[in-house]
Length: 194
Image (tube, rainbow, N blue to C red):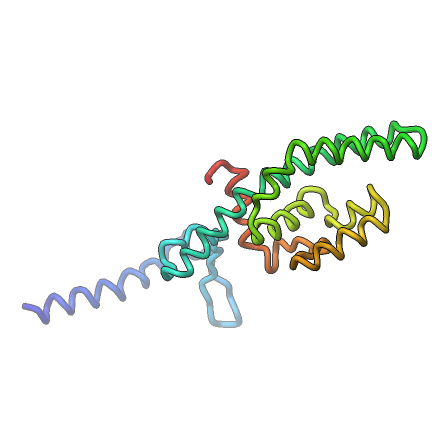
C-alpha cells in the first residue's frame, strides 16, 4: 500500500511539470537555444524587509534596529529638503551679500531653536543615517550644503568637528549599493507600509 502511494506521488511530481511545459502559457516563457529550450521566468523584486521572519535572531534584531533608526531620522531629512528649497528661494531674491548672510543667520537660528534639542537626542547611527538621507533628499552632501550656504571655511570647520566624533559630512547616499536596505525602508515609509 505504501509503495503504491509513493509511486503515485512520484508520478504526480514528474507528470505535472511535464504537462506544464506543454501548456501555451509556459511556452511563451521558453528561451530557445539551438535545439534546446530553457524556461525563463521573470522574478519580481523582493523587498529586503519582507524576509525579516526568516532571518536569525541577531540579523532580525539588527534589521529592526535599522528600521527604527531610519524611522527616527527620515522626518528630519525630509524637513531639511523642504527647508532648503524654502531658503534657496529667499536667497535668490536677496540682492546683496549682506542680505544673504542675514537670511542664513536667521535660518540657522530658527533651525537651532526648533530642531536643536531633538537633534541632540539622536544616536550615533541615527546621525549617520540622517547625513545619508539629507544627501538623498537634497541631492547634495551635508558638506556640500554647508559649503554652498555658509562658505568653505565654515564647511571645513564643521567637517573637522564631525570627524572628531566619527561622522563624515561628505558621505554620499548609495541606494543601489551599501545603502540599499535604507532605501527599501524609506520606500516602505513613503508607501505607508511602515
